[in-house]
Length: 378
Image (tube, rainbow, N blue to C red; front, side, top):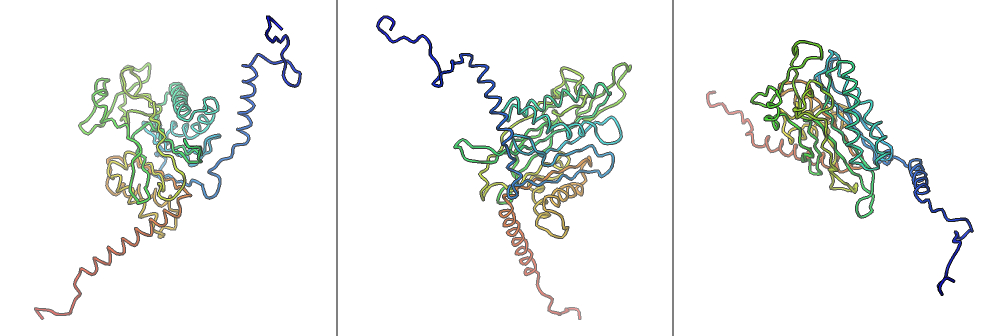
């Protein structure tokens, strides 16, 4: 006792071992061990047959001059799968786009690595985009490349919602002017992002030295270090993109690689939810409205004439429908992702649309009077 109160000289654990007061190192080691165990136990929910994600990307022109690249269902450890449209621009060479190819190769790897460190989806996406921009700009400067790309990424995550119930989350990260649409259970196009168009930033672009037309088309002159004067003019596709050195030579330039990042949807994987995702380049959306693009996709999906999978037929149909409208630029791209857990609701929608089309066709035929053979001049 000490002054009439209980007193302990040597306090130990129940097993007799001394108590470790250095909690930081122990908790850090335990946290690392627990994290490693979670990584080993993790299984990709989207590998389960009924919850698969299936996608296709159609891009024009179908030649070596095409600057696009895509990622279709690459696994990101501890998160899920990504679908990415890399819409290239301002390439230095005449074959492809090195920035698009770089992004296709690196985006999944960087996102996986950063998420292991941050363990936060939004922060991981932001850091991955920042890392991609830094690495590419260093490489582009070293190799004197002007290549850039608009990057739109859809990340599908299997997680728990606020009530602790399993759900599928769709995160969208976007730099560029491409448009992402979801098809509702009624076949209506629902836009889930806003493009970073040059028209919206016209005043800032003009102040930074860009030549901006009435329609919002922006161009800037560029020259490599060591040359006497600018020798080439480059068209700016959007106010945010990865790479594109000609657009980032001045600190006054409003052009950045900072993405818009949002968790746009959280599904319980039940009927009545959205059926598929569609990402279209700005050239497609310059001649098609959201509903026109969605209708073209659904018409192709419901037709078995092509013999293609629905998601592939839809992507091709949207691009070719836009091409037929004569867009100013023919660099057209469309990426479609089907949520396999919504296959039955999708087929029911397609059946309803087919019945509606037949009814409309029958009504038109009935309105045309039959030929009775009477000839008033005979």
